[in-house]
Image (cartoon, rainbow, N blue to C red; front, side, top):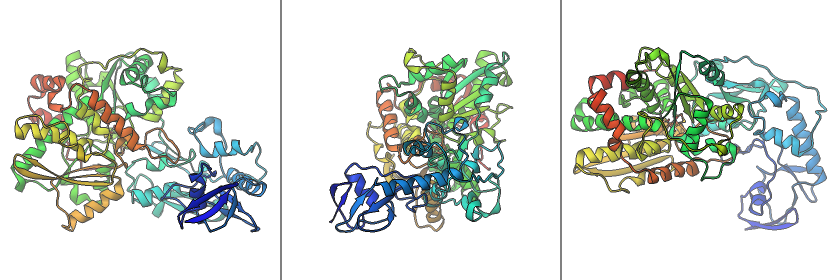
Length: 569
Ligand code: HC1
Ligand code: SF4
């Protein structure tokens, strides 16, 4: 162990520990901007400078290891003054229009400048402004970029896509798309992890909230909204609602208050996805020679885009079942429209997702099985929260309301889709029922849960072994695909979600700088599953009615036309 003193406190930590980590063990939080544990420890911002007694210099706490006998001051006049200068220099290259910034109130630079009492920037302003396609679902604002390198590193080290790189030199240095290609032509999967790991407002989703106002004001449109599984875990944080008020029912009430005509649940569509996907899996198992192995889930558009762009020879392995978002859209504009005597074009189908990639998925040409876009507008969880704020809605004051029918009732299987392993577990619950003719025990497949990057398991179904693999994060997915291609590993059914931990950790979720929350939020979904009366998609009475009255059976001609895609591009 190494013994040192930090701000007068004795600290004893293992060799190799940084001063920043050592300080944290005694509750001293050293200010930082660029630091991301294990991902970005490069002292790019130089905000974490600390003074070492007896040395005529400061060091960066995030990269300097402890030494025996060091006496460290994290907030001495010298450390404070140099930190302040460094922040002022960053601000001199930053567009400080906080009032019109999407991250205002949740910006680490703004907080730091305020904490340091910086009300004036004593340096010449020099802000880099590079053009960007404002129609693209992901927006980069170079004027806000502080060159902290977090987006570059999260994309390189975790997603392993290498979309971003440093461009130019000196004062003109900025971050832009690597390799001189446009973002549209890059391999960007739109997972949005660069957005949720940006400490400022340099990255954000396209703002689609104005489209909502337009459609709400249109008397000729019936608005039908669906809410993704993961959104219910996080929408209420912004309003500091305690768990007993942060309910699905109150979330529905806020959407009704905004003025949407029908509030439905993506989890219902997730139950339908399972009916189709589990049937597909069983068909593959019955005729193994007719199919590419393993079978991949396809509900994450970040993953589907990744396969298309980087490993196209694996596209035939994707389940042809569409994602719940798109299944919902297709059913809203066919089954529901028919029930209500509406034409598809009279319906505006809106989805609220923890995801940026869903904006692109909804716009794909292949996602128009109703003859028009099946999903018209996609908002992220963050946009939903901004919409609630703009409407001055105080959710705590609203009474709970149920989801509407017939696309609103879901089982716990549909709910757990939002956590890594959830789609796998939901599919196995139904596959077990079909093969074994009875319900699986409650804990039969819980082993696939958790945020581990790759989970390999084996289950016995009908006397045969099913080899499953559950992956989250595109870096892990790429490694898996390479191993599958080289014949190093063999699985039957593989779930992949682009975002680490699944959609609960999605790129459209509320941002908590420096925190990874997929574990905590995933557990919220498993609690909702436990509290639901039904846990298997095939037991959803509304889904049973959908098949009886409209689709006939899973993989029927109608189901194929509305609910399946070859997922090419
Ligand atoms: Fe997801 Fe899915 S779980 S992809 O993460 O299959 O976005 O939550 O809505 O479509 O159901 C996202 C979440 C979501 C779909 C479902
Ligand atoms: Fe979107 Fe979920 Fe896929 Fe992330 S894991 S890209 S949030 S669908």
